[in-house]
Image 1 (spheres, helix red, strand yellow):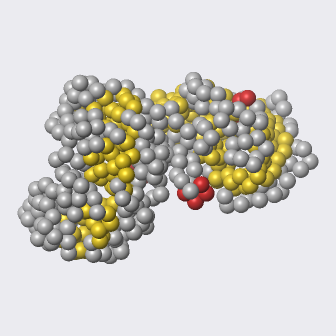
Image 2: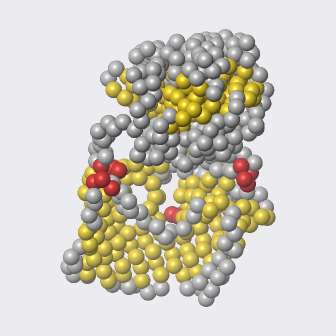
Image 3: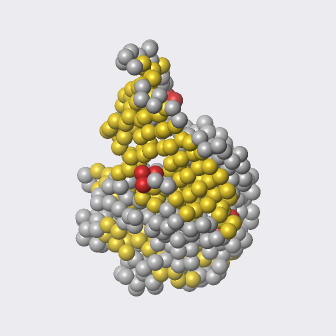
Length: 516
């Protein structure tokens, strides 16, 4: 129904990922036995039987005292569900062909929409749907109840939305144009919805709703007024630059790129990104107030050229939440290992060596040959060390108070394990399949290669798209930045490449990337 509006009230059971709290690991949706299930967003917990099996009984994670039972089998999961609430109401989900929505291109069910509700004396409401398995789209068409019905009329939209889940397309090409109500056979009244288009992407925006009678006469519409400043969809430019803090610049503190890394990170857990600067004499922080930054304050006397002998050319420094408390911590790759200073919200603790590796004198690591970064590769909410060595990718998991010893998770992406080099082949970490665990992304000469995280290792490299490489499009590190970012909001990182002619995108489907 356009920006800011949606049709709600129709219950649905969906597939959802595993969680640390309930399953001991974090996962995504795969359309297989690893999937779990949610009722209207609430996780279902199996109390009798196996997850996804026929006859398994569930409760919601926050118990609503409903008895939820799966029935039958279709693909990797139940065919339909029966829910009995504490008041005695009975609901069926997916017990008709049109309410059982298969994943696009698959026989496995993606979601089970409510198809019938009954009260304790058998009075029922039936729900009908339209499903397009080619696009992955579905929407309600009719609600039938004793003595009446409601029908939904849809219309095409130019601002169609596409997302992906485990390799299947989820496309939205329709919007609600009309809702009509009837007795058994006679029209009572209807509601017409009118839209306009806004922003550079011509997003649908509801502007009026009218109630009409059986003669086609409509009363004056209810109109919706929009203030541009309150609608992010119309923001197609940035505000005029405004200086938030008078520091961290060459003429505002003597900062330089060659010596003083500067970055943004939420160091106090308030959801706002703060300025973090690695000066010669230590790490300085300016907290964000959402309208400005505080004056620089030194949070720890280390990690600088004159505060520990740190240098840009030899010692990567970065910010990452290594203990899962929601506050970014200092991580420094020194010659003798990886040092951490935890954030307290108002300062950083003194440096502590969390693992004796990943340094020039602790494994022979160098900035020019061995990228090192922080990323949560097992989905526990704590950032882990990932190092691209000559012989493969090594990982040290965070325990919250230290890092495990390095373990090689995949034998690739290194100079002697595939011929990868810093000068030609960017390598990074990103969650490309939406399971909450960061995966290896490598831009090789012939395309983009992926090694998915299993939580305890990486899969063998697989080429997801034949582009963005030196011999696959003429891309170069010197001229063509490439990075990963979720540009369509489906929870999976996509390829973003800055070519000579503009910015190219390859969306992640969960099992590959679309063509640029």
